[in-house]
Each structure stands twice: as structure tokens, then as C-alpha cells.
Image 1 (cartoon, rainbow, N blue to C red):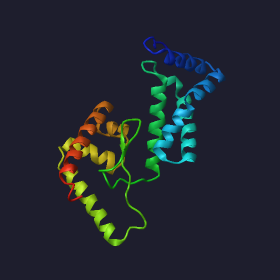
Image 2 (image 1 turned 45 degrees about the horizontal axis):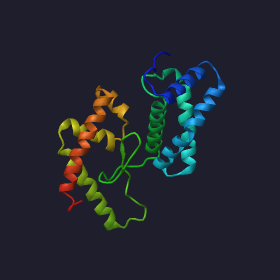
Image 3 (image 1 turned 45 degrees about the vertical axis):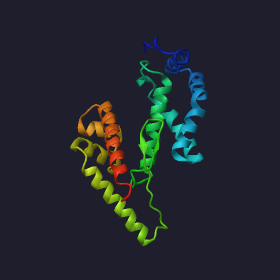
Image 4 (image 1 turned 90 degrees about the horizontal axis):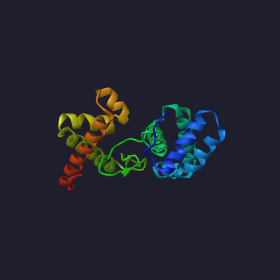
Length: 201
């Protein structure tokens, strides 16, 4: 593993630890975990709002990162790479828990810069509330249908089919960066459209 001259002192130290870990030095793994365990944990907790899940996801993130250490490239900081793995793993976890997307005008930003929207449905909704909820979903789909075809396809795949950025890039055969940039633009268009229909949604 070569490179990394442009990295900060902190990142240079991380790089040295990564190299030592790849060479089989167990204490290097321990030090990397000590340096980032707390920050990864709090990022996970912010995303899943559950301490047990956050604990599990923190361990999983380190496990995945350590299993892929040889794939790490020092063209960017180890911490950036680690946080990306943790964030993607957490998003996958949330998707697997079947959190359905039914309202696109509320959500929260992850550390990855993505917006995760949550289902506003509840088992205690009365019939009138269910009708209103369904009307919101229909209106949201109508708004999405008015987007340009490339934006419409991306929004549908990301929020209705719940595909990851990587899955969308692979399926549409376009660069990951393009997927992120175009989804950002699509969300801007949607936000403007939602603003104009606030009285009906």
C-alpha cells in the first residue's frame, strides 16, 4: 500500500496502523477501534435511535472494515472510508427492517449526506387518517411522475424500490457520483413542487 503523503498527521497515523494491521499486528486493530468506536457508535445511534442496534451496527462496521482493509486506498483518510462503510451498513439495516417510504416531505439527513424518509403510518390510524395518508402517497407519486424521465427513474428506484446508490448505479450503468448528483437535483425539484402544493398535501 503506497501513497497517503497528502493526508493529515492524524490520517497518516491511521494509515500506519492499517498497514500494521494488514501485516497481522493485533494491537493495530485495537487502536483503530479505540480511535473511532465512540464516533461510529454515536453516528449509528443518531440514525437508528436504539442503543442495542447502534452497538451491533458499530461492531459490524468495524468487522466489515477490517475484513476489507486491503481494499482501503490512502487516496482519502481511513476515517472517511470507515464512516462510509458504517453509514452504508446502517442504511442497509434500516432497509431490511422494512421501513417503508410513504412521505417524502419529512426526513432526516444522514452523515452520508443522504435523506432517509420514514413511514408516517401507524397501527392506530383510523379510517379517515388512512384515506388522508393514501392521498398523500398518491399525490407524491403524481409529483414524481412530473419530473424529467431520468429524475423520475432515480427517485422511484431510491425511494419506492428502496435501492442503494450502488445498486442504482449498477442497474442503470451510470457512475455512482452521477447517481448522487442527479438524486440531489431531483430532491430539489421535488422540494419545490411540494412547497407549491403545501395546501393539498
